[in-house]
Length: 218
Image (cartoon, rainbow, N blue to C red; front, side, top):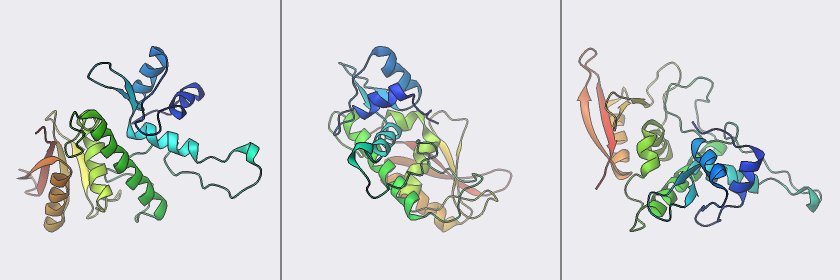
């Protein structure tokens, strides 16, 4: 999970290009943002740094804060991002509401749009069809975001009929569990539309069906 930035790092985030999320700063500042999961270094020369979806969320939250010099005005609602950093629900978390409220829906929609923009920025053809490097290095969160953004409900802490996304021994695949067979196939269709490849498998011990999903490369 991404770590919250220091005040100095927030200033670098706030100064990012509003359209592309391109960052300017010292090598130490940029490296620290990468370490916190708030920026990434472009793999191609000139190797510029850009905000990740988590970095975009922090910048957007800062932009929504009222300017004290502007005098009294309507109070802005504080963003519900878990300390300023968005985290997709993988299913089974404690202390989360059963139903997604309007604030959560806005967060998920904004995070998904930020991820699509990240895909466009990091592909030579500007396409958003295939997962990007961030998704390949955060498989569980990336798959969960695709599911939550499409309206699928994560499982509660008691393990109800929502989805659960879990890591697997395979380095480029996650497992998606969903007790209802129809809902499991709907999860597969959602992930495939989001640029993932899926296959349905059976657990040897329980005989329950689950998905094995990995980001498509072509």
